[in-house]
Length: 99
Image 1 (cartoon, helix red, strand yellow):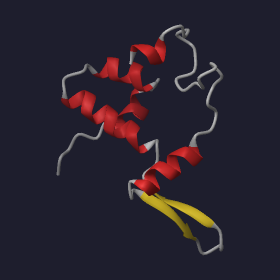
Image 2 (cartoon, one colour):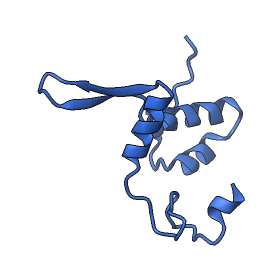
Image 3 (cartoon, one colour):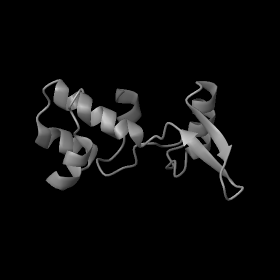
């Protein structure tokens, strides 16, 4: 983890290329990874176009928030980590009911 943040500014990009430039779009790599892990794939929609059906990178945000809260991370800290600025939006992600 330390190698991923060494030399980066606090306001820097999370995902960067080896030369330091930002990764602006990683959807292709994400889709290939998910297909390989059998977590999704493209399907033809009613419009005749291919649409992704499966795990979205954004889905991991909800899981991360839920896991942080379950493990005792204070909600205001979880909000800072996840980038939520308002309590109402955070509550949409902070679904902790196991049923």
